[in-house]
Amino acid sequence: MENSNKVEKGRLIGQGNTAEIYEIPPDRILKLYRDGIPKEACEHEFYVTQNVSRLLGVCPKAYEVVHTDGRIGAIYEKVDGITMLKCMLAKVWTVRKQAKLLAHYHKEIQQEVDFQIYSVKDKLRFEIKKVTELSDSDKEKIFRYIDTLPEGNFLCHFDFHPDNIIINKERKYIIDWMTACVGDYKADVARTCLMLKYAEVPRISKVVGYVIKLLQNWIYQNYRKEYLRISGLTMKDIKKWEIPVAAARLSEWVPEKEKEKLLDIIRKYIDK
Image 1 (cartoon, rainbow, N blue to C red):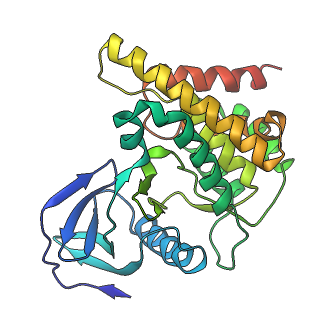
Image 2: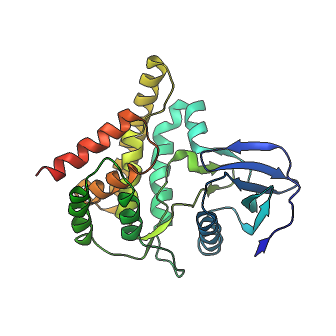
């Protein structure tokens, strides 16, 4: 359902690269997308959230797509709690436990779905085409490699990390489904591993950066170890997707230091 009427929004309670989040008392929020975010991306996120809520019950309810203040938005259920990342930062002694839970939550959503969205392979190809750091021949080599990888119909979040999980005493909610696709779930794990291992936080001091890197590595190691334990997979299985996932991530805004790490992974394959 799409509504073009002006929405009476409350206070701003959060914001990110793609949207601002406003309260709609008493129990809803407005996710108001920033200018430049394609309408199709917003509608895709709404559609996926609606269906994942129906099938798995792990995300807020999705009510309607709206147009207000000259922008597109969507109204969702307001959920109480804090992100898993904030919980980790507030109680660092729980990082090991939380990172293991992250692995379990990820495994839990990797289900075959009955609704139609684009595939992991199509998503990767689309993103890689936009990358300016790779030549056409480099891209073609990666595309040929993608063709050799497994198919699948498993739900992939493709931005699965501790800041996209809201937890409270009763349950957890997984949010931000704009990047969702279907395919081989190992691609989704490869994406999470790359983010946990290599993501850089810009504009911070060296001391703070060092502490964050230690914490980040701790999360990565415990997530990886637990996921492999409960899935029966090996890192070799996951790493099969590392090259195309790293290449596609270059299409996003990432700090230069992270970009160099990703390019190093890709060059080792390209130069073989």
